[in-house]
Length: 118
Image 1 (cartoon, rainbow, N blue to C red):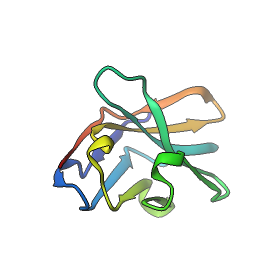
Image 2 (cartoon, rainbow, N blue to C red):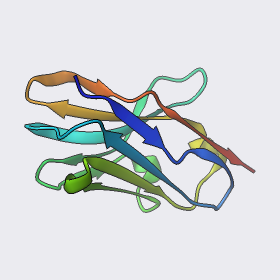
Image 3 (cartoon, helix red, strand yellow):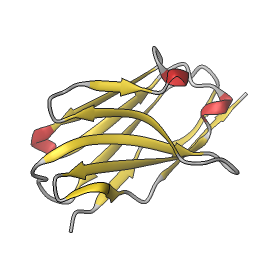
Image 4 (cartoon, helix red, strand yellow):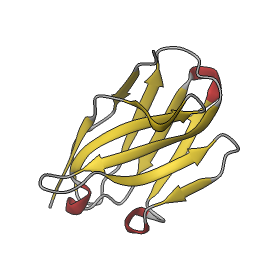
């Protein structure tokens, strides 16, 4: 079983930056993609950004140009650099990793709170 641990959340003023990290408990094989999702109070969980095993990325329209996803395979870690944060970015951010044996749901982290004040 793979465990994912997110870190880097916190409280920041609008316009500020945060960098989220998601570290896996062990090396993960046959990765399809790694992604960051978020869920704001009263809203459904949504995809923020994802990066495939080949390095292709995709972003939600609301974060394009402000957020950047990257990965360090040697450290089994995926990052989300968040710049120009807005109050509407406030949510719990979750890391997800999908593999060939866990392609549907994948593995989830416990989440990290990001709060952006106006």
